[in-house]
Image 1 (cartoon, rainbow, N blue to C red):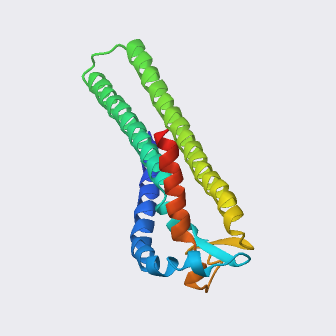
Image 2: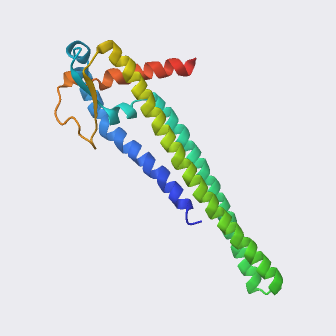
Image 3: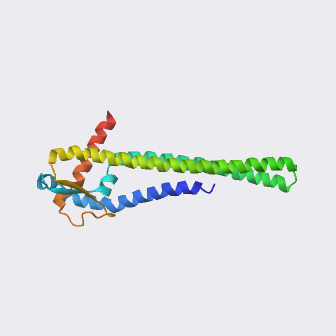
Amino acid sequence: MKKTPLILSIVAVAVAIAALALALFKSPAKKHTAATDLTETSAQAGDIVYLRIDTLIMQYDMYSDLRSAFEAKATSVQDDLQKKGRKLESDIKAFENQINKGLLTRSAAEQQQNALQQRQQDLQNLANQKQYELQEEEMVLNNQIMDAIKTFLEGYNEEHNFAAILTTSEATNVVIMGSPALDITQQVVEGLNAEYIKNRNN
């Protein structure tokens, strides 16, 4: 019972982070459009280019689809746990009411109490298990996204022959200052989404 809100908090935090990142980077992404349009002609083979990884992920359709499916599953898990929790709470109140009215023998009361305690423990174990499963699935989701990006960039760089592709974000700031001409974020987003849509429709 105590673990149930923890799962909700995980989902809530994930949603809040995604919403916050979208709000923070939606406008900058548009501001960079004009500048990054020059990247294809300005960034040359041998250049060190960079991409804004947080912006890239938030605009990646594969991330949006996987995240939506994950959040829907997490919500379903939370609803199920809450339903079981409410039923257990109702049964505990009914049991206490019977005890207070003297409607149960001592033996029957002990049996029911043991059964309710076991249900409570089972529900807590289930909540722990679901929390672990959701954390594991979220980790796999993130690995899928990063693997898809890395694979795409390997092919992308075979065409452009950049000396290096750096990733930067608001959190890491690997690239503190950089020419907009070397920012390949928008081109990579467009390429990733085109590839994802093509593969998804096959």
